[in-house]
Image 1 (tube, rainbow, N blue to C red):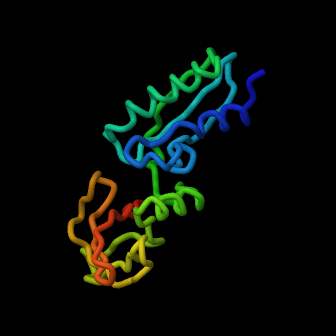
Image 2: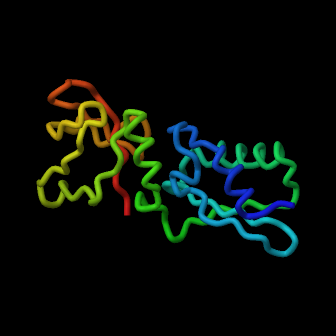
Length: 161
């Protein structure tokens, strides 16, 4: 018998193709799993509208459910409310840092408005002496930084709310 806990367990195998250490649960992309009208309803939300990874994520959800012989389900994408970095789990933030990507700082980057730079600690040496190299990193949801202490470049997962 398929249960919600079973589905959450197997769906935790579905990884974000852009940051493969994060599951769709870690990232907060998986919004809801419910049993309705004789089928499982799986609701996902992209990190931003038009995110190209969502097609791959949806295909991986299908493949994972097929692997575990879950047949009766639907997948829907919901855009509202919009995804926010608040939905990344604490475990997900730890995985990001261990992977070499600075997790979002708990504030929206208002530097453009107020000229006060956000302090983004280096995920490698933990130094707070860092500088932004580019507002866009390897993907649109990340910025590119460099540590001024260890000199290593790193991605920063932008805080979005």
